[in-house]
Length: 225
Image (cartoon, rainbow, N blue to C red; front, side, top):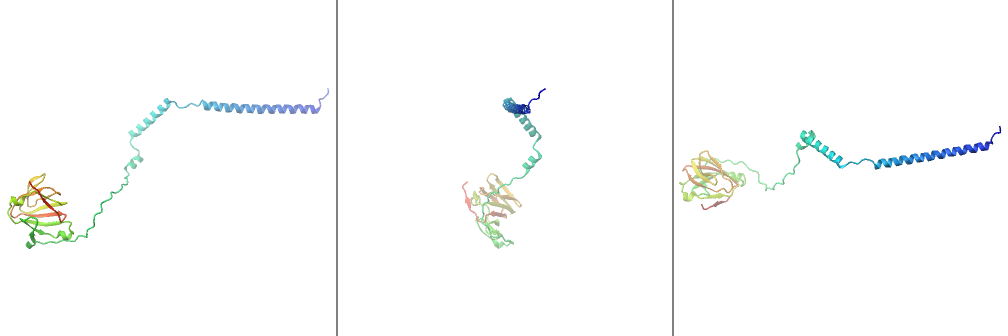
């Protein structure tokens, strides 16, 4: 049997290899295209959240929030709430500085009693005015004339910041705005707020009072009943 030429056989093998290679390339291209198409289709058909799903998520969040409220604040948030907050201190009014106060000592001396604000009384200054550079006045008051209502019982007020009265001896009847008449006896004490209307209605002949007043210098305004 006659053999085929070698050149013809080699040519046929080359054609077959080329065809196989072409088929592989085409097949790979088709597979890649199919994969790309599948991915696009999947992306288009990916489910999105509906209104119903969103509402359900909102309800779950509300339930969690209510549960946290029922349990109370966490330790961290409670500690944060308890932590003091820094506050800006208010700017205080700058008051003029006063010279340093000094000790004031006053011993009894009958000659120290002098006339003063009231014509029916005498005053013994205790040296507090000078010691406090005019900040406080303290004196002992004693009545030297019988009580005459026409002279004594005049409604008035003092332009002071503070006033305190203490009964050292005897008794005195004073009438205070909003309080009425009150009898103050030995050992009694009272304060007279700034601008309170008041008057003396009567007193014993031996009555003596201790008065402490701020500031040392003040005005007295008499009123008509």
